[in-house]
Length: 609
Image 1 (spheres, rainbow, N blue to C red):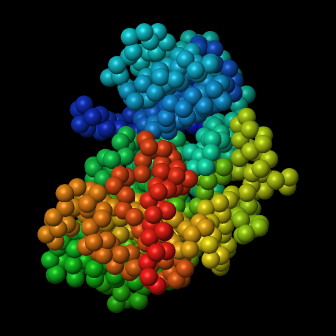
Image 2 (image 1 turned 180 degrees about the vertical axis):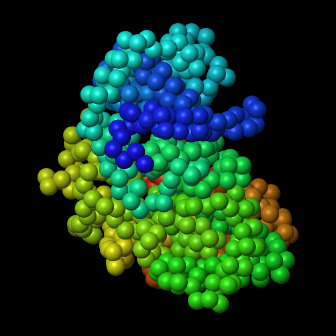
Image 3 (image 1 turned 90 degrees about the horizontal axis):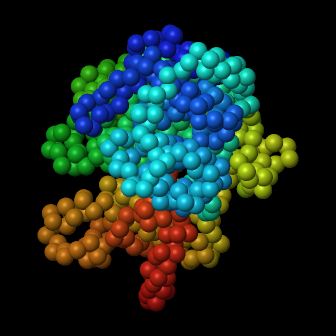
């Protein structure tokens, strides 16, 4: 691994080592195949971006933006910008016009690189109020330009013209030599579940330190094939992808998140970072197939998974050797049932799979390990360059923990058990926002995460998001995310938002998986005209009530969902109910369904006791 290499030099240095070996692959949707990009070609395109930015007059530490889905071009722009000490700001591909306008003006962006038609249309729509915008560069050549657009061009056309002269090569080399680890690499605007986005400053030094500490605990190498699933805008995917490139691993760039299962089966990755929701969907899919299979198939597969779970929970997670009868059974299943399950998912070459971003259900974590897949659970934030803690594969791991602290991170617990952090991977602050910086980082340099937690036997456990902690009118504290994570593993439940604050009992807004729910209704002879009728049918309510009661058996009485409402339309980014990272904007959801929530509680009050 290139541990001491500045990101401005990383791709060129790797090209010297690996040459024509494949660095990246991406799916060409027109030809329906995966196209390779060698390290040498990667480095050449990065160099041309540096030349192009130099010719545009982009200044040292000036901000430019990318507004795109995951594409190879995102990486060309990133590393090309680093080569001339330029700061890149990635926007989520789903960002609204208002969000883009705010970020463009807050960061004073003159040049923006966009992905497809949606991003192009959005930027053109707000261009008149983006005060410094000068040029737009478009990755996808199928994008149709607006008739009066005089400041946009296609990225490939622009790149073809950027052949460096000897003088420019020397100038860029001089700029690289002056680069420091204190330079800003990126500004990542947080999604903002409660208010306006804040631009988190990430320096090259933060990435550099992150590479060092993650390399010490993760078995990643240049033999790995890594499928990108989360957006490069997300700090988890961004930092992880940079680490993979520093190790010389091959990246397979998944453009469309909805294609991820297909991509898994085509790429056969050894690693992929993801959020728990991905594994919840895999778990639900396997459980559904089991329900539809024969009694013999169910017995065989459940037996294999039960054996795999026992092996991991009682032995491997504790660093213990398997007793020989169990080792024999595991060996058999790994050659047959479990091998077939992994092959079906495209994970027959699995090395390890980092997972973070939300609570991981113990059911799901146990299932993934039972299938012989090394899920590495972790915890981190944008402000900590992703990883704060993660499972160390050579040390004991416990269900429900988020692993052990990485080296060089200091931790302590403040009021309400809030996790406070300090170290070289922690942001110096928020861009252009001293007030927010002062609120988040105290005088002694401790960053206040807003998450409550504790350490047991060297492992970090999360309790709840302090700002999300609800207090019922009976004075009981409720952690909504914990309850939501239990319910969402049910195959009939797609999304859940817990309601409890200042109410007498816990309730929930639930978006069902309509495909499965409609199938259930048909199989049980329920005559239902539309979704509204489906959501209100007594048999459907009774079935879901029974399943929810089963899922929350281990909760305290006051934590259990007593009532729920089925929502006809999924919560979405477009409707303003989800952030770009798919976190629920609770205030927006509560406001939208205020009448339904009030009616539900009023009805409960009027029931005879």
